[in-house]
Image 1 (cartoon, rainbow, N blue to C red):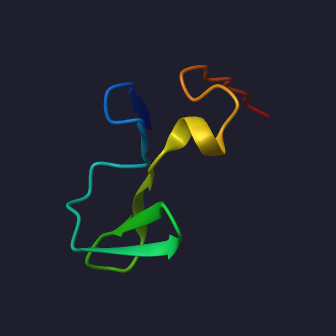
Image 2 (tube, one colour; image 1 turned 60 degrees about the vertical axis):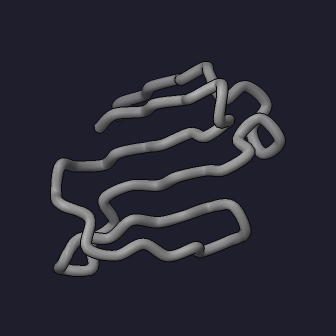
Length: 64
């Protein structure tokens, strides 16, 4: 998994795996889901991230 925040464009992208993107769809306004050919979610793109998240450039990682 990779997480990238681009401050210039204010976009947060969460890449879940390396599968090629076959299709994208806007699930909610400003939240785009990328799917592979098997309809599995490959990535999540959040537009205007600073308006939707308190600190888009801070990542907390937890394993259970």
